[in-house]
Image (tube, rainbow, N blue to C red):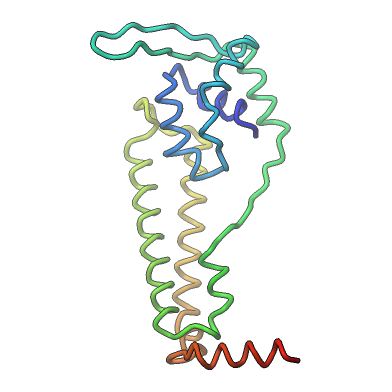
Length: 195
């Protein structure tokens, strides 16, 4: 989905200020999909020009005025169409997995550190899902069926990763060297380049 479609998807839940939309994109949406935060306000203005959102100016004392955006019926149709037609690809991008490809070149201590950090991140993600379940949607409503599904899928993925790490951890660590010598690696690299 492009930036405008993502903005519409945030507004489908209800009216919001630009600040609230930006916060939702940064804190929630960006954890799931790639989001370009820098062009939110120009995109909201374009959506308003296209009749896909409306806005009301709200005056505030001792603070700058703000705009509250609301999706129109035309905007809702565009948003639903985008959700119906976009390719919902699942991508796995992980520096953790990339680095672990080089486990034979890393000392056991680094492998242990990587695995421990990843398990701690899993614990944080699990706690975040607990919070989402307990608090519901930002406006206090309960999670809808799709959100409940996503929380459950997130838990299943975390649980599967934890189990895999637990079952393979000692094997991976056992196959790593106790220590590494950068001099030795440099000599091997120089010999390989000479061939």
